[in-house]
Image (cartoon, rainbow, N blue to C red; front, side, top):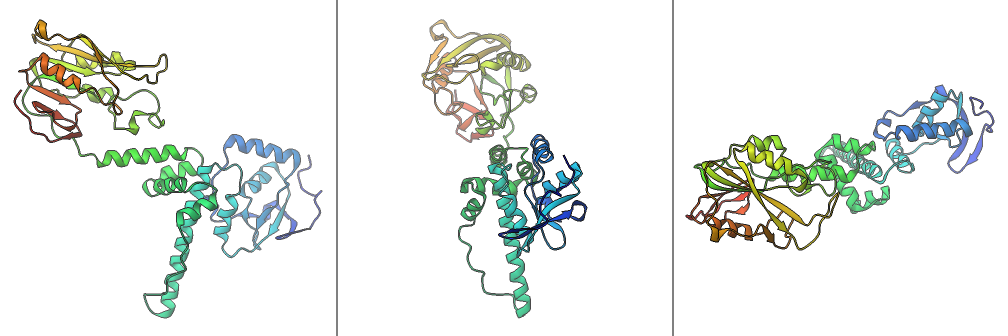
Length: 390
């Protein structure tokens, strides 16, 4: 293929002026071109190969000084392919930066969330320009107060209309930008979906609002009951990730906890089916020996990779010479109870443990809400409660 565009007529009439040929080396990117997202590397290579086969069919839009306002990737491809000349159209928009972004919003290779980030930045740019104009008017009049600019309507809805996305998408993009400019840039460059970035911000804000857990209760307890915030394998960015509901802990942090268990004590520990070996290791790390387990059979089937889970395991560990319950207080190993909210365990388990060991001191780890009467409770979602004698 010829390395130029000489087959094009020198000038063609067009709705926004004429198309002409300019030497590729005479053009330069706009100083604000860094605002625009890059094309995915694979997609760019395929797109450049198409230009090599068919030529550069879409003219670049430039200002009178040869600065590109739309077509930075076309200019790059032309340089890489050795095209000596490229078709251009000279335009003179009132605001070059605004035109730069609005033109980019028309590019088909941008994802909806990339368009949302551009719309958010465009809106911020317009606000900054309007504020600068307001300050200039105030300075000219020698006063600090000037008439307000005409109202622009609902900013979020206007930005959504410009980007061709929902107002919720614009809201998420604005929230990510305000909270984490680095994440915002990852979204804009197409390296991270907007919904993933928004979930990360939501998780951070939720976790930051949680009070730090109080020190573990003083004294030593006979019965320890816990539902650890297990960190599951896989991506915490998934829409089904546990991290969307509460902060999790890696096994190493759980194992390092100094549990206030008596020399002779018993542990009831909820596990995750896929992490049963880790649950047994945690029992041993806390100084207990594995004893047995209860099975909670739920009324509804759930998700699962190899089967559809409908049960959870409550592991039992024993320390020292802590005795098993009397024969008349040994209950079925099967607990049948309906599913509640996410990670909520059956209230019947409290009653089961209280009947098994009515006089033992009891501590619930990773508790939520107020402590149950007769129990001590610990966790970053535990609420102070009156502890009655067991």
